[in-house]
Length: 68
Image (cartoon, rainbow, N blue to C red; front, side, top):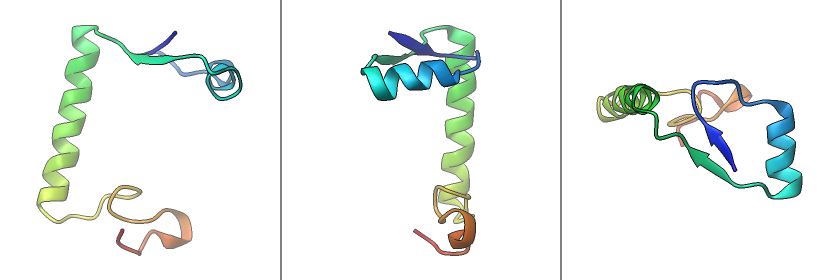
């Protein structure tokens, strides 16, 4: 099981998930969880305010000006 937390997610871990089906989980560490919750709250506030968020409420790359 690969835990996602404050550490780097490596190419080897990506390969193990994509090619070998290794499981993925989210860390229960309180400081990391608090950071993720703050990030989610900022994203939610931007979306509620109607501000475009690259790759979330818009496309990416050449489609970045297209609302999704």
